[in-house]
Amino acid sequence: MTSEVLEFITRRRSIRKFTGAPVPREALVTALQAAMAAPSANTVQPWEFIMVTDKEKIKELCLAHPYAHFGVNAGAVVIPFGKKEGYKWFTHDMAAATENFLLAIANLGLGATWCGMDDARQDLIRPLVGLPADLYAFALVPIGVPAEKKPPHTQYEESKVHWEGY
Image 1 (cartoon, rainbow, N blue to C red):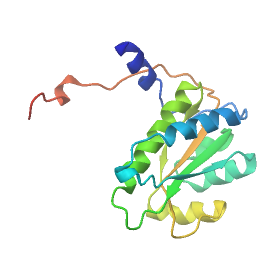
Image 2: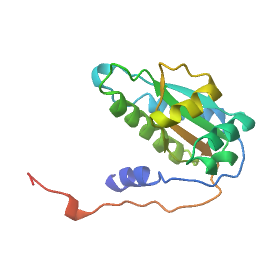
Image 3: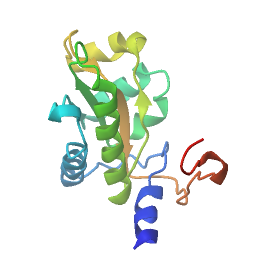
């Protein structure tokens, strides 16, 4: 049982090469359901998601983000977003939802890479998807059928674990 849990988690790898094949809508919905199962402070659930499957729009988004150019052959792009202003746990909640999404994608046999968004990148992405200025794009995640295979792995280091205190 414990090895099954670790296998599930370590299947998630950053995949940056895609076949260009479309991603089944059912898989995207399943991954979104997983994302929305994430923990959220006071159950605020600040997340919403823009899902892009149009090939030209995918290319445009990936070329607009300086670290997402690899995603031009992705079958989809998801942009988790929400109202950041006034909610101090926004980053925590959004990170949990994004990681749940990535775990689901990996375990559906697909690949993805989380490309972070900061204040400087907002104006590069917002106009491409019509996102209003009061909403914050948390990440840009190209998703696709992997054209590369990476073995499961962990980066566990015993020296970074301190039992019962430092």
